[in-house]
Image (cartoon, rainbow, N blue to C red; front, side, top):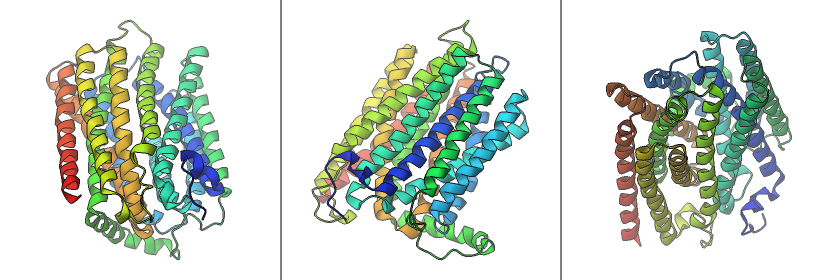
Length: 447
C-alpha cells in the first residue's frame, strides 16, 4: 500500500473505505428518522405521562434485551461474511421499519410496536459492530485513528441531520401519526440504500473474517463458548478493557443527562407548550451533543495520531503520545464535570445544551481511543465479539445512568430535581477521572 496521507480524509482514497462509509451514513440517517418518529409518538405524546421511572422503563425495554443477546451476535460477526451481514441486516431493517410504520398508522403503541422496535434496534447494533470490525480491512493501520474519528462522527452527523429534517417536517406538515409513519418509511429507504452500497464492496471476503463458514447449527452450539473465548481474550488485553470501561463511565453520565433534558423540555422550559416545541428543545440538546462529538473528532487527528512510529505495531506507539492522549481525555472529562454542575444549577436550555456539548466532546475522545485500541490489540478472529461486548457495556451503562437518575428523582418526588443528576454525574465522573489519572501516572512512570 502507498504511504498514508497526513490528511484525515486520505482514508477515503480506497474505494471500499468509501463504500463502508456510505453504508454507515445512510444506515444511521435511517436510524435518525426512525428515532425521531418514535420519540414523538411515544416519549413526547401529550397523552402519556412524563414520570422519570416510566421513561427509564421505556429505555430499559429498548436497550437491555440487546445488551443480553448482543454479545452472542459477535460470535457470528467473527464467523460469517461481514459484507453479507451488512447486506442482509439492512434489508431486515427495511422490513421491520415498514412494519413499524404500519403500526404507527394504526395509532397504537402496543406490544407489537415494542417487539418491532426491539428487532430493528437490535439489528442496527449488529450492523454497527460489523462496521467497526470491518474497518481495519479497508484502511491502513496508520489511518485507523483518523478513520475512527471520521467514520462514526459522519454517521452520527447523518443521524442528527436526518432527525433535524424529521423535526422540521413535523413542524411544517403536522405532528401526526401519518407524518411519523412517513418518516419511518423514508428511513427504511435509507436502509435499503445502505444495503445496495454494501453490495458494491468487493471482493466478497474483503471485510473478513478469513474463516470457513460452518453450518448454522454448529454456530449456535458454539456461540456460548465463542463468546467466553472473546471475553477472556478481551480481559487479557488490558489496554482494550480499560479503554472500554472509561467509555462506560461516560455513557452512565450521558444516560442521566438524556432523561434530565427530556423532562426539562417537557415540563419546565415551556410549561404550556405543545409536543412540537418539546421535541425541538430536546432536538437542540441532541444537536449540541453531536456538535461536541464532531469537534472532538476533528481534534483527535492531532491528539491521537501516532505517526511518529516507524512501524504499524501497537507496541511502537510513543509513550509520550499516549500520555498526552490520556491527559487530554482527563482534562476534557474534568471540564465536562464543571460545566455540568453549572448547567444543572441553571437549568436553562442554553446551559443544558452546553452540558450536552461538553459531555459529547469528552465521550467522543474516549470512544475513538477505545475503538482504535480494540482494532489494534484484538486480532480479527476475536474482534467482532469484543465490539459486541463493548456495545453491551455501553447499553448497560446508559440504562444505569437513566435508572439511577429516575430512582433518585422519584425518591425526591421531583422529576426535574437537579440534585438527582448531580449525584449521578458526581459518582460516575469522579470514578472516570480517578481511572484516567491512574492510567496517566502509570504511563508517566513507564517513560
